[in-house]
Length: 172
Image (cartoon, rainbow, N blue to C red):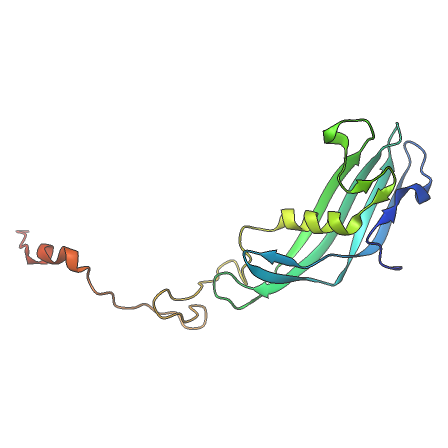
């Protein structure tokens, strides 16, 4: 892999309509703040696969693929979480094709902002919660201990509002 490519000049590929190219590039993906917590992207410079195809009318069809992990706290137990994600994103940029065919990551007609696209594509891949394991039990709501390390239950005091029901004698 060569030097990091946070942006890429599509014009330097000199593709004719119908031609394509596959590129392997390292891209810096910025860290996340997710649910009020900080998460680092690993590896720091993510190796990506970029597929570029030239369309008729001077447009591009783009595909971005990579694997990355986030490191940070589990939202259930606050322990270390390091889930891995596979990203597969596509964009089309066709000048004059309207909003649906205008990629926000292609500046002008030739400059592709790989760093922003990779970060946004990873963000769209994330689940609603970052957890250490899918079956994480979390923290005990009464004492705060980690239920993964020390599974337990507490005796609950009956609700005093139901005390009169305890006096009922049912014939069985």
